[in-house]
Image 1 (cartoon, one colour):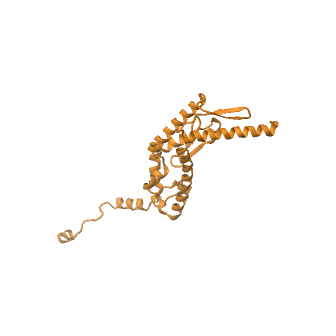
Image 2: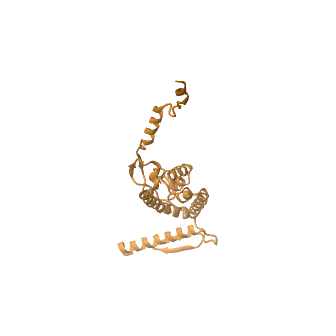
Image 3: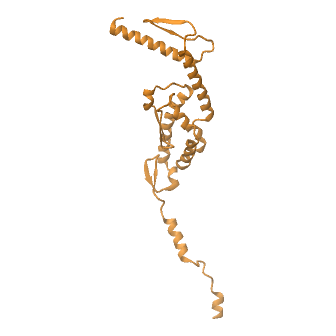
Length: 220
């Protein structure tokens, strides 16, 4: 009896129930989650973002957003006053933040969209999206607007506002006209900004169209 007790080996699995539970956990499938890129539910966990179908959908997903972002960047480089009647049509959907950005009350086109894309919240949601769905963390700046660019844009907006106010306060230069009884006066300066010139061209074009319309309607 003593020899048998000496040769008896200890149980390598002292708690077989614990090991069984661990095996069950390994076999248990991941919970279902929704992929906004592929627009489907899956139980593949983080492996899903490495599948070819997901990568293809992600490429199209990000390309569509970059197309919208390029429109916003246009107004970032070329500040344009936004008429109140067009504010409701000037909207931007951020796929990273699931936010609908409207421009109601904005004085410039894409004003709220530009500030949103440069915000800390957008950057946080963008990084989480790229981590969860893929796309490369090194591409963060491709889907947002930098604070330095916003600072330049704000200066241009202020400059454009001041130019508009000064031009509406009175004449400072030669008179252009007359066009059908109308006259336009504007300042002539060597340092005149391109935005002001574009605004003046638009006014002249509107005057021409008005004259043409009156001619067609009343024969003036």
